Amino acid sequence: MRTKRIFHDPIHKEIVFDSRKPEELMIMELIDTIAFQRLRRIKQLGAASLLFHGAESSRFTHSIGVFCIARKIYERLIESKSSFCENKFVLFGAALLHDLGHGPLSHTSEAIFDHNHEEWSQNLVKNYSPINSILKKYDNELPRQIGELFASKQLFSKPLKTLISSEIDCDRLDYLLRDSYNTGTKYGLVDLERIISALTFSPDGNIGIKPKGVIAIEHFLVLRNLMYRTIYNHRINEISTWILEKIIFTIKKHFEKKIWLDKSLYKWIFSPTKVDFEDFIRNDDVTFYYHLIRWKDESFEPLSTLCKMFIDRDLLKASDISFLSKIDRLKILAFARKSCETNNYDSEIFCGIKERSFKGFESNNALKIWDGTYQSLLENNSALIKTLMKSEESSFIIYPSELKNEIKNQISLMRNNSLTS
Image (cartoon, rainbow, N blue to C red; front, side, top):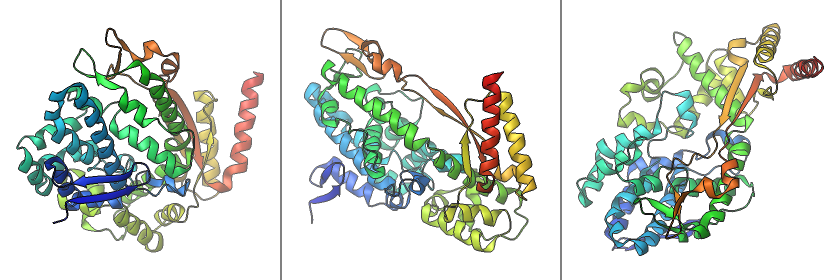
């Protein structure tokens, strides 16, 4: 029997699993389940590949990476506190399975379906037999313990919660490195080894950071800020999500018209509370894209046009109107809708305002500085981190590309009027 398995990862290089270690044998068995293999067919960055052509990485790749970071952190922490070894199976299992519940195109599913990936991850770990039975082989309490870590308000173990679900956790450490690499946005690499080497336990029992790691944490949070502003909240992502939302809206509104739809996706759209494990696993990027291609060629208007826009990347346009007053934003929306109707576009479908927010770093007291004598909040020791806690709001008007010039001219006119008044 082969005792080792190696994944060659672009970020972490060789990730080696050794079946002679029970906790790693468990991970190998979990990786081989149908539910985890499905993550190969879920894009990590959803529709971002329409903008960054290298953003084709999967949730499978990311999840392996999160486990790799969790294992490195575990090996560091047991040097500080040997009793932490009792958390090994929970930490490794949660790190690997944290994204198990993602729908098609990852976070885009949260917007277009009534879907919560954290609830589904918890549901799969606790109740899906192929996953549940593997975990119970190693500890009967593992499904419950791992599932509770995925619940947003559960704090049964602060150190584990910090590592699995906080502002500076294994998940974020991997996806910021991985997404920066895959999108080609070289803002600087997170000093992962420095952060890990600076981890310790603080007097309150939670994980702390030694003063030597503060600059690496600052670097990490600057990268987070830049990634959200330039990739995760990019207007192309917002436009793509808008189009997909309108596709689902149109199907719901006009389902009496003839349309091909398999039974699993039908449940995802019309009765999400009835989606069972089989329905969940059947729906991935491949299945969803196949539907979009069928609808592009075989459905009614405006559904066919919306699907063509997404599949052929002939997208709607968006202009920033954040600088306008709320009244002027409504005026430009009315102008754009009138232009839509004049050009035979359904203004409810092809035009609208998209608000978005970028939440700054929220410490939630999860990770504190501990120098061996005093404990303090990260933001109290770094003016840069305090600055990065600021949130930002923005607003875009979305419209068909044919209307670009007249809407941009109108926005300029309104801006000039507001400056002179």
